[in-house]
Length: 609
Image (cartoon, helix red, strand yellow):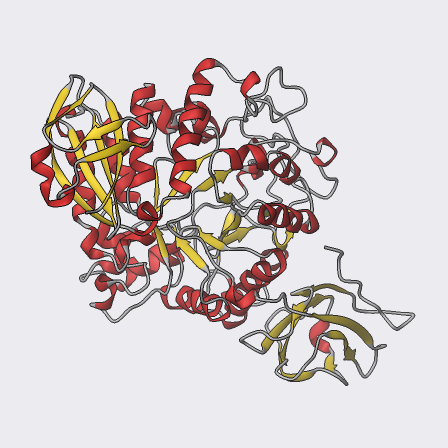
């Protein structure tokens, strides 16, 4: 996106406008009110007028460098407009502003749902498609691939270059960790400390390139999900360096870290001071904790989120550290987005493993309803299932005789959710030990990935898992975020094609692609009902079914062969006699005995009688 040009009609200025945000807007929005943030030296001294825009209010806060100008755009057509900043002793400043024609069908855009398969990418570590932007003179952190904490040079062009590879896996949506500018002096590759929320980090590319990524994905029927952070910004953000008002951030007499007590909102006995510590405490010293109760800040955050949806044609948000925000204000934020885009998707990251506490943050939650709250967020991340799988493979004293039961019990709690199908299910992410590190055998990967692909919810995987990439949390976060082999021109081999992958990597890739490309076309998996049977001898059997079709999934996590008596499953099999193995295409009798080799999986499809 080309930066908005500011025209100053004077010869001797005592004030200079350096920011106008949002940089442009659209006509025909559901909410016809807009707050413009103007930033520059001593702007509060100026009066704001316009001959062709309806100004309803101008707010000045403690810092004299801000003007918050409220507009009513209800009858304003697309076009070029102008604000005038006037001063009795200084020359006036003319600020052009553009109102765009809204994309046809924008309000009806469809978010992600259980028919999708999401691929999580940390852009700095995926692929370097444009080495010329690895560093930028205005940005502090420089590239050094030898340093695991430094930037490595991955970028948006690298993702665009490998969209076909991603698509070959059956992926229908991509979630990138944050891509807005992060100008922290070190560790900025992580990107969760934004220094400019209207600017794609120039070491990743540009706003235009981000829009191009979205366009290229749409050509492949893929959806783009932005990772959005409402809770905190970098100390390098201009609004943190020059606070519009002291209450723009949560301030303490001395540095105070959040308690991380994320279950506090569902605690019927919680003290107000404990709620304050969770919400107002800082995540880390380098990230200022935002006070969403401040009305101009809340408007700024809300408009920024809507701006990116409209500008980049997004299909969804993943919202970081959701319970750390001011509860009622983050709900207003979500409502404003959903009012503009009723079919949009927002997934809340609430890192708690008890389904009761997870349910609280999902729209229409029966748990939240008990206290009269409704978060309006469509999706939550299923940390309960994640924790069960992780516990099976890396618990200090693994109870191998109970591993399938741990998973079974997760689904027994689905009654606490308004819609279990709107859970995002995953085995790992950029903050956790990689699943291949702890479930290191291929048969283990096949079992838990089959689980991921066939249970209720929206499956999400992490880049490189499909080629057996490893990484351990105890070795540091950077170990979880290794460079994808072949993503850099200097790499000696590439895993982006079959010839460059090892035999083991191809086994992982081929299985993943076969499984999720099959899933892509199975509505019974996307939206079907579930029936499961208590595990016996570490064999877990469950069914996904509609009125016309049934999928039977058998997961044998036993180190020994097992034989299933199919009569046990008569309630779901009914009168069906034969099914088909979806991978081998072999005909499977649905009566008598079903042999299951040790550590094996089977997916059987048949028509519902």
